[in-house]
Image 1 (tube, rainbow, N blue to C red):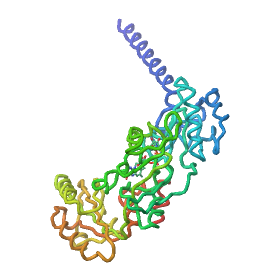
Image 2 (cartoon, rainbow, N blue to C red):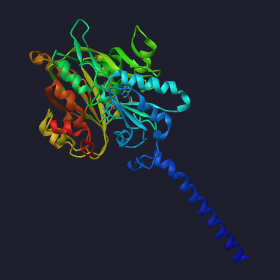
Image 3 (tube, protein in one colour):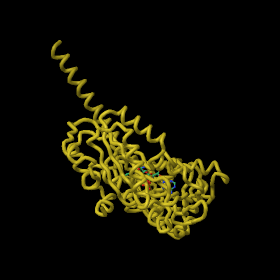
Length: 401
Ligand SMILES: Cc1cc2nc3c(=O)[nH]c(=O)nc-3n(C[C@H](O)[C@H](O)[C@H](O)COP(=O)(O)OP(=O)(O)OC[C@H]3O[C@@H](n4cnc5c(N)ncnc54)[C@H](O)[C@@H]3O)c2cc1C
């Protein structure tokens, strides 16, 4: 009896093992296609290139071109968590390249199951700019008209959907103007951030970037090139803005501008209680006296204030040197006031008075005065950890410091 029950247990174990092995082997093809590490970008994945749908793309007359090989990079993004290999990458030189390609795919009908994704600077975190066995449109190849700045009563810049915000900053500053609302990091494309929202410390005042757009040129899902705004094709306009790339491809945007300040008073202070931190933020937002209000959570970082010292001056150096974070979670208030050099005294008085209303840890008040360009282009770098700063997309800015 004992030996027959142990034999049956052995048989059950064997069956269980076989079952697990079947499950394991069954799961391999899915992992090759969809798994979240680099090895999943494998040439062993057979894309639809061999199918007539994909090869028909080669018949299109384009200013740019398609690539079908060595396109692994289009299955990667900043997040490095998802890797969906496309069948082809379009490198458009003109808006009509995008329009002709999408018209062609639309004509194939839904049975083709070909998906299309625009790829800006690929700083998505979860594969949003990837298209599994579909077509990725490499927006950075697009060669549109140059940026055009209009300095009229309601100034604006017309820029390509593939333009980086850092280039828009430098171009508009030549006219003493700049966009009102930013992201913390400026090496992102216009189309990429307008498909999301585009949020930074100016959003409490001006709304996110999508609230500061007068007009868009969009290639729709049928391949038509349509101009849209609040008053013209408004459904498309509001669909595309914040539309996660699902309602059309942004090829041009008219972005509202304001006079650019020369200088920025940039302030950081720490809190150890979230309620005090958030109520001070709400207080400052309701006063609407600063130009930039943000915050960040800092977990278990030692030597924090030392790290900031190269860019900020402690209000009280002695007290600041004695501050010990003791591994606590800290909340960092980050605020800024724009000013021009001739307004420096009035700005300092107003800032002092506003700071006196806040409840931060007194020894952790840090101040700095930097140019507007330095503030916009460097603020992100100072708040991110060293290992992220080493990322290849960020090196240019770090070295530029
Ligand atoms: C280091 C870093 C800092 C960041 N800082 C901020 C920040 O401060 N504020 C903020 O709001 N976000 C921030 N983000 C998020 C970032 O704004 C989004 O990930 C943005 O989409 C990235 O722009 P991109 O050009 O890299 O777009 P991609 O990652 O290439 O694309 C993003 C999405 O937009 C679509 N898309 C791209 N171009 C177009 C187009 N022309 N037309 C239609 N759809 C298009 C893509 O298909 C995809 O769905 C940050 C991301 C990183 C990695």
